[in-house]
Length: 124
Length: 238
Image (tube, each protein chain N blue to C red):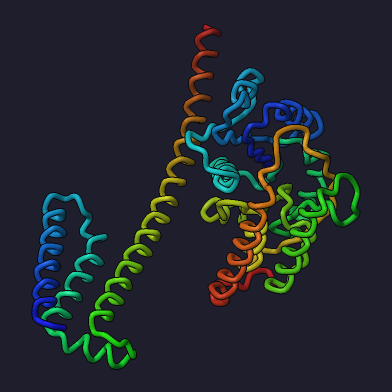
C-alpha cells in the first residue's frame, strides 16, 4: 500500500467515524446497533495506520495484492452489518407480532365489555 | 373440561357462517373463537351480524400468528384443550370428539386429525400428497414419530402444549414445524383418522411456487431444531 492510498483511507475512515459519532450525538442511531459500525471503522483505521497487519494477512491468505485484502475486509464488514440488520429486523418482527396479538385480544375484551354495557342500559 | 376451537379465518365469507353454525349444533358444549386475520372481504361483517365470538387482528399476521393468537386467548381464558380448525369447511366438527379423546384418556399433548389413515373423504391433489409424504418421511427420520398427515390444520393440543405454542409458534406454514417443535420438546404426539371435505370457499394458500419454498423452509426448520434441541429435550412423560 503506497502512502497516498493510506492517506486517502485514513481520511475517509475519519470522516466515516465522524458521521457515526454525529448520528450518535443526535440520537439518530441507537448505541446498541452502532457498535458494529464503530468496530468496522476502527478496524479499518488500524489497518490503514499499521499496514503491516494487512500485509501479513495478505501473504497468509494468498491474496495477490494488498489493496485487494482491504476490499475483502470491507466486504466482510458489509456482510456482517447486513446480517446484523436482518437479525434486528427479525427481532422487531417478533415483538411486532406479539404486540398485534395483544392489541387484538384487548380489542375483543373491550368490544365484549361495550356490548355488555349497552345491554345493561337497555335493561334499565 | 373447558375446550376451545380456534378458527383462523382469512377471507372466508363463503364458508365461515356455515362452519360456525355446524360447530354450534354438533358440539354445543365447546367454545370457539374466530381469528379474523385482517380479511379484505365480508368475513368481519358476517361475524358481527351473527354475533359470533371473534378476534380482529389489526394487521395481517398470516396463519401462524393468527393461530397463535388463538392459543394466547386459550391461555388467558384458562382452557384445558385448544383445537385448531380451518374456517373453509374442510374439517368436520364431528371429528372433534376423536381429537380430544387421546388427550383426555391417554395424556397425549398433540393430536393430529389425519385424512390418510382410513383414506375416507377428500384426499387432496397428487402434488400436495407428494409434498405431505416427503414431510412425513422427513419427520419420521428426524424425530422418530410417524405422522401421516403432516400439514393437517385440524389438531388438538393439551393445556401445557397450548401454553408452549402461545409463547413460541412457527410463523408461515406452521403445521409441520409445530409437530416437530412438540416432539422435540418432549410432548407426546399422535394421530387419529378424521374425514375431510373439499373446501367450500376461498383458495388454498399453497401454490406450486410456494410449495417449494414451503419444503425448503420446513426441512431447514427440522434441521435447526434437530441440532439445537438435543439439550433442550425435556425428559417428560417418557
